[in-house]
Image 1 (cartoon, rainbow, N blue to C red):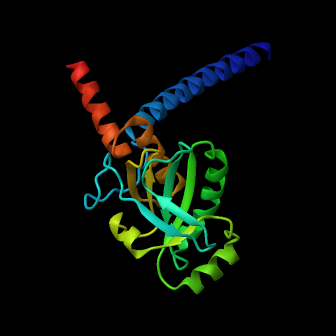
Image 2: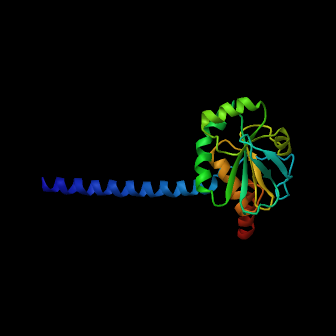
Image 3: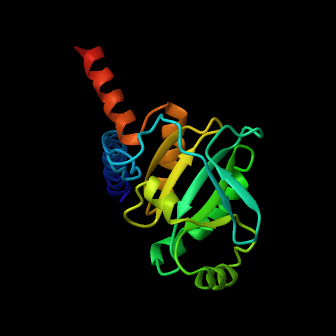
Length: 206
């Protein structure tokens, strides 16, 4: 009886060690996979304004009647995130909570401006329904054409000096955050940053 118990304990410990080894191997593989899979970035169009260039200055009026300047040097030192949307865009609606959170968490350096075009009455009704009345909201077809907005939702990040840092189609929080990362790294897009990083690593290995 005692021998059987000892043997069963030995087998149990062997199984535990084997399981621990397998888990450790899986953790290592997950780490390697994480390094190889690039984070999602905003899909940037090659047309229109180039990142790193000064964005044109637009002097617009928000739906609340306030005057708003987009582009140019900002005396408060803040950047501007232009978020292009439509009341008929379901993806745009899903990103509203993300924008709400970012408006609070990034308030020290960023202002978020909602932008669109079309009939003013429809936009006012949509704003009231989404409880976004206090947000700066502009209607300007010219602004959208200048930023080459082809599909929605679309975002463009302009820094405190009026320089276009990044822009692209955004379908998730990660896409929007990739614009912030591109600004921080001084590149046109997160894809460009990863490509450059990979090339530097390969050259270093060589």
